[in-house]
Image (cartoon, rainbow, N blue to C red):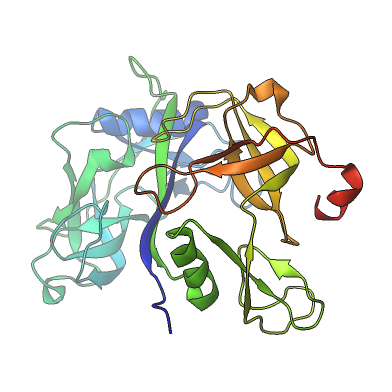
Length: 315
């Protein structure tokens, strides 16, 4: 039985958003070592501040300054920090109600062991050495001596020099992908410059890439069928935005290609032809590069275009 493959996979993209007057003031304040909350309609002070009252949904603009000290309301120990977390050594996730606030702020507490953390303990902000206007300007919380003290919140205009108006938040997912037996056989065949699908024993359709089961009949597929290498463009799109870490000049074309003998179109890039000459029905063939495990792209074969009736069921 062929080896079932696995591979690390990372999906990531930078999410850019504008902040508005409330969130912008909060993050700019952190850059200036100032913590701002907002007063809700019932008089409670919400930290981090929100733009709309959580009870009445009224728009809120009454910013106030709270203290950089507070009290732990609840916590959980993190024995194995992960990439991108606030601290590289074990720490506690804590909800901290800052003095003058009525809600709690989630952040990390630098503590030597879980025995050093307790609900009700006093903590203070440890500011980052370099601050840019982000929640990471609070490097973490650290234990603080003393009992809780009354803090008189003061109104704040929310105005700072050079205010932060937007942020870029990276979104990233790291995981290990296991394609399963059917797709492992498909990938291993590609290394030999062959394209292999699997035929459904019931409807007799050939699926490429194979899925291990027929999506129509719901029965297992086991019979392997070599298809292609040539095929027909069924539909396509023109890409005008350059992707990071992809060394392809825009514009270029990605298309669904129905390989000869297959009953499902696969996705691939079209090359060897100007992007504005790609069309439905175009006959194409794979182009391999030395040492590659899959075709780099597909190019025109020079054959006459396929008749629409021959591929219309695969669109």
